Length: 262
Length: 254
Image (cartoon, rainbow over all chains, first blue to last red; front, side, top):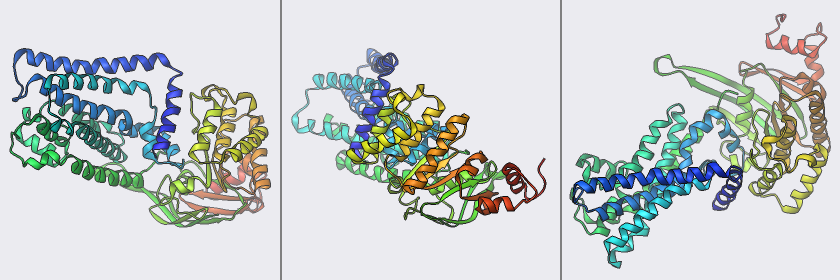
């Protein structure tokens, strides 16, 4: 699987190198657009000293970890939620007649360096946040683990979004609400939203385990809605559970696939 | 080599109240032995493409059983892909922005073809189909005829036992068409590759197919040799008229 992914990624990279102009502009464009997110956070802190009890560096930490998870997941697998385009164009059929996983082919389709823009921006934000926070090593170890779990959770959501498009081929936007919506939601401390929403993203779509619960551990903060302490370490569990659901949904989608008319 | 046993495939179309079920294929059964060259005919919307998609594992049948090269296409889709070659005349599997040669190298990796075997095979196919002059041209710059030859090569590099072709001569000029037919004839005669071909060009059928199957409204209406096919309408001279009669169910076509 990994070999196939790398092989196809390399092939698409060489293909995209045929058009260097658009490739570079798109990378810069995505870096800039996402930098505006940070500008927004900055503006908020011009008016207030804390956001739901979190300082600027802490909000940047939450933004950076979730942003990095989302960007890497989007870079490696986000293309899966373009499935409806491939179904409509009939190109998904040609993926199904090759002897490698259709999921891998979808994920890597049109791979290009422009996908690096957002990850670069999130890394910068996270680096700034960490340099201002001065965290003890006894808590820092959680950071790579939470970013990894975040990648898995977002990838599972992208996959669910893709699987949904086997049914809703004409409404891919429904899936985007969960994928990109989830990416945006996790940029702020979840406590700025209502308790009901926090419970929703803890128990229904486990976005709280991307950066909120493990973030509370890293920043050594009490949970505003008082969930048990061990929830802070439940990221891997949530990631695995959601992945299992996503795998089943994708397989069910392939079985129900209807192809196009011709 | 191909066994289709009482296969059906239906689609539900429309939304909520206006929902209806369309039977694209119903109770379809046929067998194709190793080494056969079979033409698969039928008017638009008769169920040809649906059948091809079920044989290649793209679509799962709603009922019945299929075996291709000893495998169930739905359950063993990727394993089956190594044993069959598929060409869609209207859709390329080549990499649009890369030289033709790169698509072949990629096929070698994806299908895990041994390097030595691959180079021998590519040389053979390249000689037969005259690929040398555009081997290093990006696929997007190839003419339709050249691209089609590239697609056929890509489908045969792993030396499949079965080749499935969906309208392979569509849009080709007279010379390209003749070359394509001669190539397919040789492939079947010399290598013994089983070929199943759909087409609307009855020249393909007359030149190539010893056996013809006709599907209409999702079921076979004819299965036999080319001579048997002619015998269904003794009064008609051209094969077009014979087939048109079959499609319209015996009444005289316009």
